[in-house]
Structures are given as C-alpha cells and as structure tokens.
Image 1 (cartoon, rainbow, N blue to C red):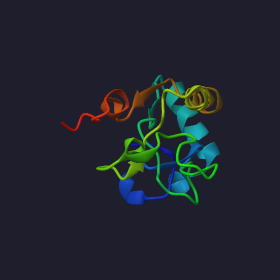
Image 2 (cartoon, rainbow, N blue to C red):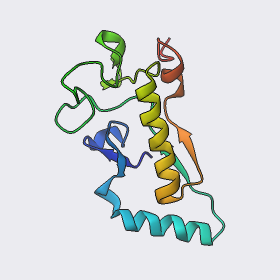
Image 3 (spheres, one colour):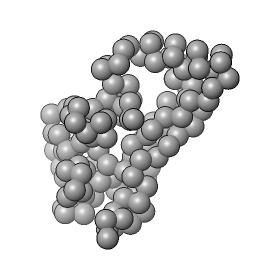
Length: 133
C-alpha cells in the first residue's frame, strides 16, 4: 500500500496530501528507515508504492489550489479531476510538475534508501480516459 502522507484512511493512502512525508499511521520516519535497513540486512529489496497518478483534492492540507489557482500542479477544469477516484490529476506537460515529481522520487531513494518503485495508476497517467473504458 502507499505510504505517503494522506488524509483519508479509506483511500488506502492513494489520496496523497504530502509527497515528501511517510504516513505517521505506522510509526515515525526513523521507524521506516530502520525497517528498510533491516530488510536490506536480510537481503530483501524494498519497493515503494508511489502515487503520481493523482493526488488529494483537499485544499487545506494538499497541493490542490496551493497557489490559489486550479492549475498550479494539475490540469485545469474537468481534465484535472478524476471522477471515479475523487482526486486531482497532475499536468505532466508542465516542466515544474515533472521537476517536482522527479525530485520527489529521488528524495525517497536518497532519504529512505528504497530500491525502486511500483507506480500506482499508470493507465490514468497515460490515457485521458484513465483506462476506465
């Protein structure tokens, strides 16, 4: 399951509100680092389930409307909203969004020593119809 900080527990971690923080529901940041270190000592690779296909639509604790506009990180209008997931959709055509997400991916590798990723919702990232048809 996704471990990035999220505000809605029923989303299983897929409505991310803070891309640079592990969820506090399962322990501290140091606990996560210790878990990964222990797995590595045992020869186990640790993959992170990372969520770049969508983000929380919350305006108080997420990126939505971060600068007061609808399109700072996300597509504007209906294209920026996933109707089934009730979440926001990143604008991957924006260099700033790509830099943000790539810096985030690197940060998890460097800070927590994850070995790689499983990307959630890839069809939603690739297709405007989000793979729902």
